[in-house]
Image (cartoon, rainbow, N blue to C red; front, top):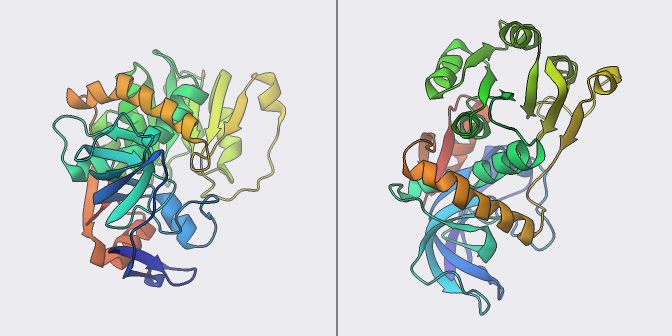
Length: 327
């Protein structure tokens, strides 16, 4: 059986991508086969397209880390799902296709009130934010978090999840329009990093105390400003290195302020690790989505045939929220 899927002809820009007919993927005894209605486009897809983020061993080479759709077939050990269930799922790869395989533990029901397009915007960012902001940084009600890239999928999700759990949120973005977007979404302060020094603005806003948590996707020359922006016992979590992986900085603030500097990637983690996040999201966050207290933020929707245009748009950095591929 054949299906449409996005295939990369080599490494490079969006023009390396094309829609082709390939075999429907095989699935294991703990997996489900999902007929995909929509897939999220994320920054890791861009990095993989550029040859810098290969899929884990055994994962599909097809791009795409999240989908929403309908369960078509079940592995023999799958007991908690049924054929015909409408679900969204975190994948290790293979989302830009008519059919995708997901481990049963990385699947969640579509929250009441959401359509497939909106549900496809949930898994990659919501799993990532929960894992890093709540499990790793242990943010608490009453604390303050700084998230760089406030209008990204990660940024819009962090703003809403942190606010819903009682934290104050500061964001950085590259234009006044994007800053307004963040504050309208719930951020307490949005800093235009092109016209303002984020460290100075953070310290002014917090009365020189600093923030308790920083979720950073930049690294590079942001490291010094990040360390100076953290309060005593602050936690810096690095989840991407858009500003570069190497930097020369003073390590003394880490010691003097008792800081924790950590980082993670989610894609290669075990099925059990991801299943635990899924359970937390289902218990803690899905009810808030169903009450419309948290919502996926969709910027643009592209048909699968327009995959090149979709990736050009992601590369531009103009998006505010998620970019979705419709199948």
